[in-house]
Image (cartoon, rainbow, N blue to C red; front, side):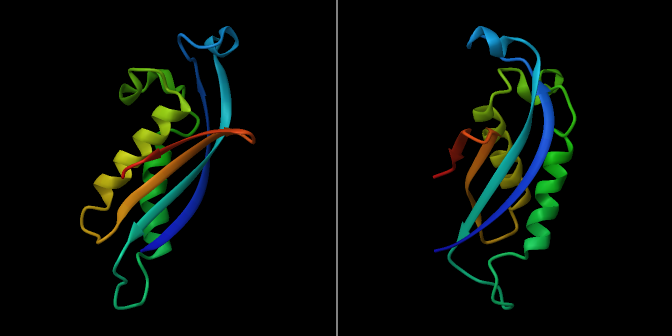
Length: 122
């Protein structure tokens, strides 16, 4: 099994509900997003997928989140937590990889240097 990982960042604000009182206030993060895809077969060029193509797909997804108030976005009707952000990115990327022989293995959303959430599509 081959795995590729790419990392990107975005900044956005959110307001969590039913968690610590401090996080119920509107606040923002500079999220670091780690994307890991996996597959068994390499292309004729000897790669799982071109990094540029994968980065392009991810960029299209991140563009919808960057510099937004996440609570106002339709796809975050529940809390726009790091867990839900990882879930959203995983499923949006999965849709873009339909014509490739690879799958999304996991997405990790870091909201700070010492706190993250990972969603795996296993």
